[in-house]
Amino acid sequence: MNRYVVAQLGSRMHYAVPRIFQQSGMLEQFFTDICAVKGWPRMLNAIPNPLRPEGLKRLMGRVPQGVPPKNITAFTSFGREYAKRRAQATSPDESTAAHLWAGTTFCELIIKNGIGETQGIYTFNSAGMELMDHARRQGIRTMMEQTIAPFRIEREIMGMEAERYPGWEKPAVFSITQSDFAAREEMEWQLADLIICGSQFVADGIEHIGGPVERCVVVPYGVDTVSGVSQRSGHSGPLRILTVGAVGLRKGSPDVLAAAKLLKGKAEFRMVGTIGVLPGAEKELRNDLELTGSIPRSEMAAQFAWADVFLLPSLYEGSATVVYEALAAGLPVVCTHNTGSVITDGEGGYLVPLRSPEVIAARLEQLASDPELLRHMSLTARHIADEYTVNKYGERLLAAVTGGDSKS
Image (cartoon, rainbow, N blue to C red; front, side, top):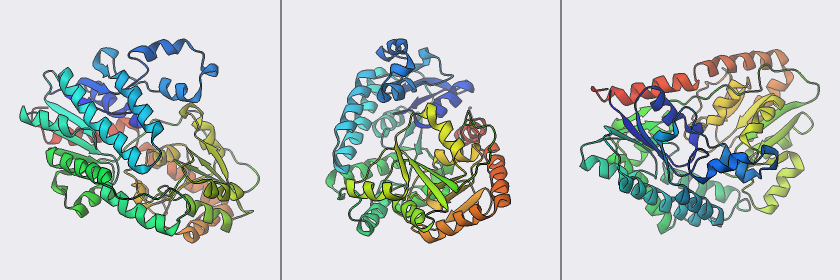
């Protein structure tokens, strides 16, 4: 059986990919930036959870479950510097520069460390170019996961949205830095023998730009059951609508606000996530819905339990894992095609067009006025989620990975 190196910045999908490779006996080594089981972060476990600040709670939640520490190489000092640069970024350009630096430096650290006797490399967009080039020179198979729509498409969409809502976020310009980032991403496609896409939306984006769509394989994600949400209980009062994700243009926050205004008195809206809009837009949002700010993952079950419906009118995603979590919690989902969702319109929720608050409001009002429909949609959501667990995601991922490798 062939063994693979997985290189991943951050804790995306709670380290599902290295866990899947480890469980299948195919993981050679997992490289990451910082996690709670390697280096000095291990000592922080001694701090009782109630005394941990939010940043520490997030760090201590970075645990690659199921992956033995001996199979993990964490570049902790690098991870700390990366977090510092992201925190200090005050513009989209500075944020992009931080990601560019991190992707290049991460690859260099892995190459310097050595990749052992691996037969394949699995990387993620923007953080694999030098590593894949290094691997290809040695005849090692290269794979990458495009976790979100291509960067050039992101910029095109966000440019249109900034014109639509000029006072919501700081203006973003497609600068040389961002052009370099897009070029890096597209070079990674050329270096990859296989490109994993979380949704057809992502694969279509690669094709639209002229990328090697023939090397793309769509592999929908999966999530663990949302603990603490076993059964939905009824409540009196208006329909409760939950949105999770960074509050801003990308997640369709203006459309959530417009829908909330249309349904004032008929529904309650709550948005959970980092607030990334300017003060004037934030004030406007708070007039018509609840903003909680960022909430630790350990406390998210209570948010799903509060809600009746999940709403995510995103302009672009890869395949938003929070939608899978909402389905697993028994929430009907109202979202756009661009979220990369696995629902079909009318089954477990509704697909709505981009920038369509009136359609969103109509769908939500339909659910609010028909308790039996809401109950049926909730049951269907759970059934859909049963097909998109982490285990079934692992089966799909390994089938894609080994399908092009007869030695596995």
